[in-house]
Length: 234
Picture (cartoon, rainbow, N blue to C red):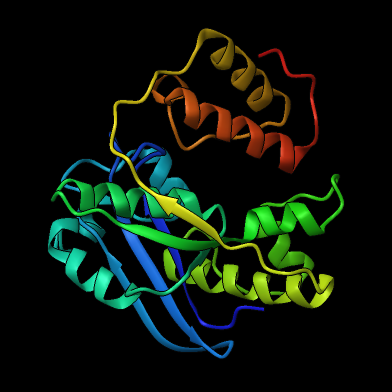
């Protein structure tokens, strides 16, 4: 089991690192399985925070009005993360936003990462929900959801419990961000995603039509993983 890493989580205005902005970043450094340092800050996105995001996170425009902009925090963020393995629940999402912000300054950021969502899919039964809130309830982890620092801590605690439960070898992935224009969501994806959202009474924190093709695919897979299989029409 890997015991040295930085657990991270972001809150954002949406799903796209190209079109949306970071509004909060939380990180916790672990050494030998123990938290030894933390980083937590609100981020001023420079745009209005949609009401649906405020409903999910509790973060509104007033809260971030005097917060630093992401460009002013990048040095501190990367100094904190360093060359550590990063860990998070669906951590590719968090990595992509950070790497995208760095790419805007022509800085490449590759990272080794542990995804607790993928770990949970590997360890737990297929019909068990894999979302972070459910996993925290299952493992009796007390936390405040949809705030960055707390979710970073929760992901780390879920990771340790999954390791204890399974004895499985941790999968460490290598991420490398390539900035490119992404293809838009397809009409079939729009219809299928809408049907999933309606069937499971989900309140999405995004506008479906604004998703890219790859984001829509990941969101569909996430919903199917958390709520159960429904015949795909893609």
